[in-house]
Each structure stands twice: as structure tokens, then as C-alpha cells.
Amino acid sequence: MSFNASHRYCRMSAQKVRLVADLIRGKYADEALDILKFQPQRGARMLEKVLRSAIGNAQDPDQNGGRNIGVEELVVNDVRVDGGPMFKRIRPRARGTAFMIKKRMSHIHVGVVPLDEI
Image (tube, rainbow, N blue to C red):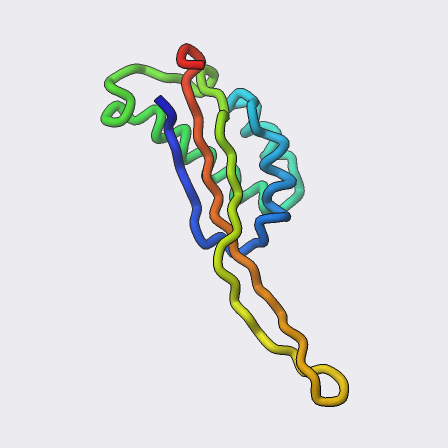
């Protein structure tokens, strides 16, 4: 059984968060937290919060059937960063033209699974 968490409408482009997401895909959950803690990118902070939420969902007795699952027994099996909607702004340019500025958003999804179910 996979335990999931997501952060929707994250105010950062998906391309920037995907660079950090590739570092933790397939790793143990505690190892992934250590990797994210020492990454300087802002996307690492957001991904770390979502991963902590997924770990918390796995440790919740209501969701895991009363089992005692530790952080060291979880593996990050699903990390997806999808593009979200964009704020579109217009910047005036030379000779009366306009330039479109797209302020991008993303949806971050993280799934962890216990070791015995792999």
C-alpha cells in the first residue's frame, strides 16, 4: 500500500523542482530527507515538506491498518512534479510591443511504500 502526499499550486516552476526530485526517487525515506536537507535549492524545502507529510501518512495508525512503520522501513517510490496553471503578465517592450511573462506553478506528488511491499 502506497502512502501519498501532495502540494498543489506550488509557486515554483516544475522544471526547477524536478531537478531535486530526481535525486530522491527510489531512495529510502530517511536517506531522502538527509539529501534534501543539504540541498541549497528552494524546491528542496518544498519537496522535503511533502515527503515529511507522506511519511506522516504512513505512520498514521488509521491509514496503515494499525501497523508500526518506521521511517527506515519506507522507500520513496513515486515522485511526480507536474505543471500547474500560470499567472500571465505583460511587460511593455520597445516600439509598442508587449512581452508575456509566465509565472509558473507546479503540483508536487510524493508516494512512499513500506519495504515489505516492494
